[in-house]
Length: 446
Image 1: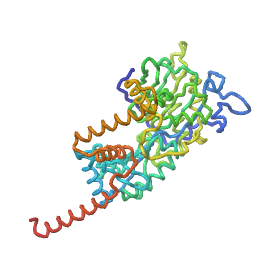
Image 2: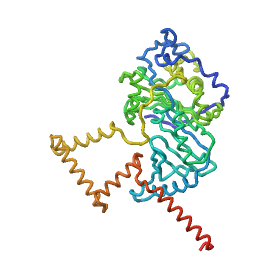
Image 3: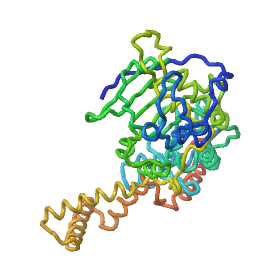
């Protein structure tokens, strides 16, 4: 793997340039098939011609992969007090106490973290949202990351609307949120070899990095760490590695053959760049995706066909693949959404069952048992004895040990509220503390 410290540069941009940068777009069907007009090939670049067919380029999905929003306001005092107590519980040395560090809002059972980034007081997280809450007037009151899985289910506008109902339970604020960062993506199947010469990238960024893993070329990163950056990477390999198998189903719905390599072009836009365009709120940003994408893929970054005859790189013709990617129409349907979603962070069957299979088969081989049901009984007996030994070593009953281990996992997975009576108890404890403080103050601090 090849890496290096990167830093990208961005020039000041006039807000009105967005609409000027957005080129004419093909219709929705043409964006999916790569054709425009009556069966004509879409021109892939300004000088080069490459027959557009699904073997070469097939757009599968495009949209928002990551979204970070900031919310002004002030944390409600009662919420502050409760989260302060839950954070202390999360910092406990006793695991059974840590398991109770949960905060429920509606259908969301958030894990309350034991630490928070500098400037923030609390962090709440589940499978849909990661919320950082600040008490400082120097920072936004709430900073939220909306997960890619939830965005793939409802889209960015609906995701923000859903979160708005939650954040109103935490902070007192009336202003609309601002976009701190937005990542746009295009998933596409292509037979193109992506391992080009580094000089093929013509960009305003100061760095271009390539990556490989176990001899397999995995992609490019341009402008890492800057206010705008790009990644072109082997998404099929990445999805299989991290277990996001729902993407494979969505790609198949869009016509993917299940064989052709799937890659992703991802453009990351930070607040500083959006401000240069005069954009801040989510509706504004979503209404200008065509212009933002055009700036990123025509002004800031281009993939070209290097020419030995012409030393002026800005005149090099656009690579055929880049012609298709830069002409994605963000006003059209970006592909199917997932039909179901849960805010829990539970591992799927595609992770749990292979691990269970591996353990089960290994146990059968070790014990020399060929009969499935006999092996099942023997394994359950071995697991019970192991758990019982662990419980005895901790001075716990078998049932108490299982309950403790389960509570730890359910906090991590956001599936069960381990102690429903805890919020009421924390409130009672706080009332009692305030009464003690009042009595102490009334006695002159004695």
